[in-house]
Image (cartoon, rainbow, N blue to C red; front, top):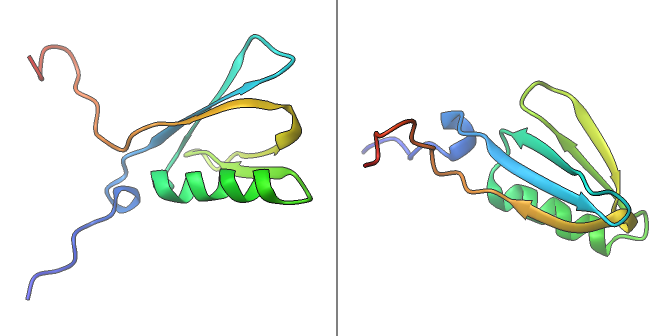
Length: 89
């Protein structure tokens, strides 16, 4: 029997999260080792909770605590590895 395939977080493929806010023209961009599904679940849970706080950790171990009441948009990137240069051409 073969071993189970590695998950994206076990492979070390970071997921980029872009968060835009209602009162700011700038976006917060966080790269995390969590899977796309795990991040999406955290965002949904934070939006539905009475507390209204989203907590995320980036690939460097920095933690972000975000008031979801100020969030305008959240984009959870893909876990597909990026190609560099003309590698995909």
